[in-house]
Image (tube, rainbow, N blue to C red; front, side, top):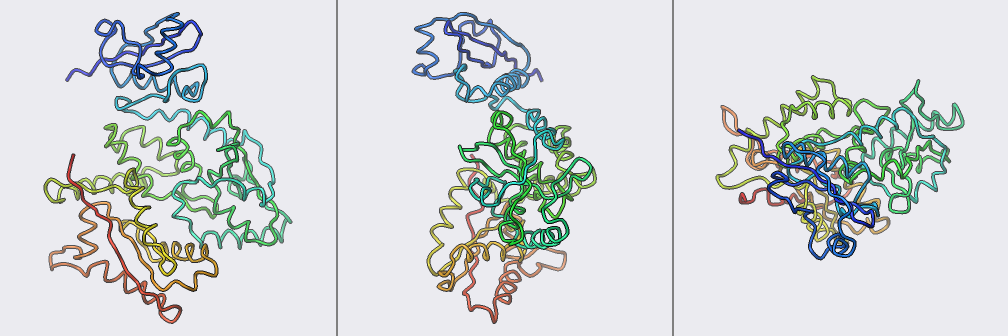
Length: 425
């Protein structure tokens, strides 16, 4: 099958401001094409005033190649935040079927190579920063306690928290994006920060501040990837980025851009995240492939709802907000990620945030999402076997949660489901 043709172009007006774009087709088919911006945009208004100084065809080839180049060029200058460019986005679009991670990997390498200075920062100053580490809902209080205990030992031994070095990279570290939202943002090390805050011996925490000029070129999605890469497998008392995160990312890449699970770019990404070939095969690729098989048993004409993307993230949060009242604590978790410890961590976090008002709570609601129809069936009806169905997971999970609170607090325990299927469109 012949691949779709496209071209990448650059327009410069007489005020020296630029516009870079890509278009499906050939320059001969679109001789007067200057961009997809709205006619009322600043770009087209200025074009009427200043006229075109130069128009260049930068590349001709497949649509994927042309749109990937457009994105690469715009990302290099951060065009959407650059006054010398009219572009309102950093490009790419549907046809950019590979993910150009070069900017992420470049910054990741600089961080891991300790090209930015590490300083001891007062923990009171760190409290001012925005926490933007991925999947904050997975904050693990037991990990915080473990780090806190290790901090106590090191403070007694050294009198300070030893920072990581090239020869000993596994130690305490908080990574901060300089001037993120004009304040600063913690992209990695939230567990370390929380532990330092609660430890009375700790006054300062080793912190690497990543210059704004280095991270500003990254999109929010790329910052998300960077945060995940900075929190890899098998690191010093850290909570590694969950398998569910990477499974979701690779699934979205295939759905949105057609990138196969076992592609070389995905293998490179997972390698940098700390997975060895066996781990990525068993824990990521096989799970994704099995999920696709499970999707085949979804009722005809229906598809699963992914609550990790908009607008379903908002719908889930709205439902949680409506359930959380003075007397009710509501938390959410996916059936594919359910453990008693994870649910208790989320409930504990909610109760701590309420302070004295926590004594008013009499009801716990666990709001469930199901990543696929097979998960929903196993949760409510039990997993089918040759001898019949096993006991429903809901029955077991609810019983264990009730048992945990027996003798501690007489909570009413409820499990509720978010819709897990929608019509295909």
